[in-house]
Image (cartoon, rainbow, N blue to C red; front, side, top):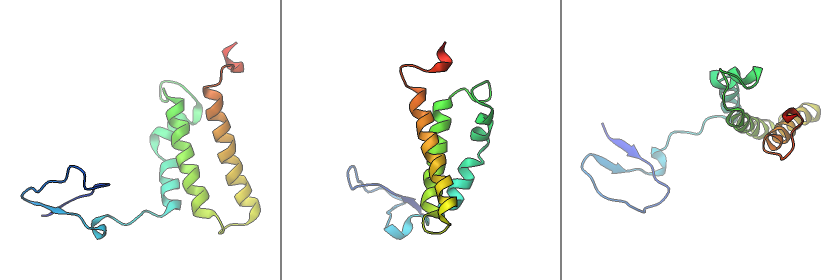
Length: 113
């Protein structure tokens, strides 16, 4: 079986037995954005953080970054495909999530009292 090794550039390129330079067609097809958003949002590690920081969710910053990735995919998937109200809700969830992330690293957090 041939192995396809994809690189961003030719830097460090070398010949090796059993390896073939991968053409663009060697890359797997892109996943649909809605599938990416749904898969990430339903991932067990992210769902474990629905209850907030705790034993099952020790890193809220990683969870919110993952959530933002899912929301970005959802926004790209649905732009121009849903009504304005639905798109507004999706956009608002993204805005609220970014604000939450910003609050994690802010100098003052009300929860620090």
